Length: 382
Image (cartoon, rainbow, N blue to C red; front, top):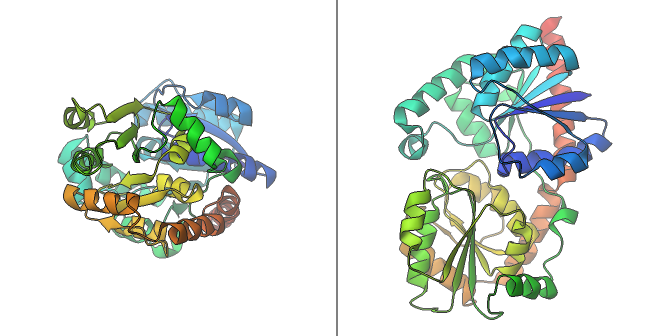
């Protein structure tokens, strides 16, 4: 089976990383993958693409209509059995191109989009989000089958895009345990030494694009409160710029205990060096960072939103309201000071990762989803 993945870009974000994590396991199951992107990116994943032998085509046109025409010509050359679209611009262009070439489409629902949080904090503003919602809603019938990355996303986006439940299939995103490695004491000390961090200093980690969705500014605010109790604590922030960058930088200014690291390709190492992950997102699809943290036995304090609750399951790390910096600071302190049953929670997180969130588990679900999509396309064409 040849599946052509159409995605906005190959920046090193959660959707892009998840795509590459499962690629070699899908290949072992007979699924050949090619990737098409619409927007420019920084090339941070090129080495991984080359190592996997995945063909990557960048379209010359960046708007959905002209991209759809260019993509239509590419589909006629490569003749994939399925088109798999992820993120909005790619989905709009992919649906139109697939309709013109009669190619079945799978669309990933990767976030709880178009809700009040999205409208209030999106870089596109409320009107832009409304227009995107309308375009997504109008073209949704062109998708053969939907992939939701969590049950909460399936329920919420099914309602917002008026998709019948039987057309949505939930497959959790996966990570390769071998790539993540093991959280050994030697690895922890080595990474701390490379970062010039005292081996005994409490380290809080934030891994997120600096968008308002990810709410990193609340992590910074909470950390400044934490410093009054732990003056040698460090906050590491790994993530590319976004529409919340200015606020994060303003709140972090003048504090030498806060390091803005920018985009990092060594996030698993940073997780091994840290004591706790701060994850106060305002809305999410699932939270790939949470998956990696569980795999690497990193303590977590996260926002009490339904996709996060689903991701963590029985792993009861502290959860707080997204914009409550005081509660976040208290929860971070409780974890660092040992007031939570950390060893038991780390064990539970490791077990949950290995059951639900490995690349192998994701590949099994994706192959089943693709087979259902092809069956549905044949049934509709009969």
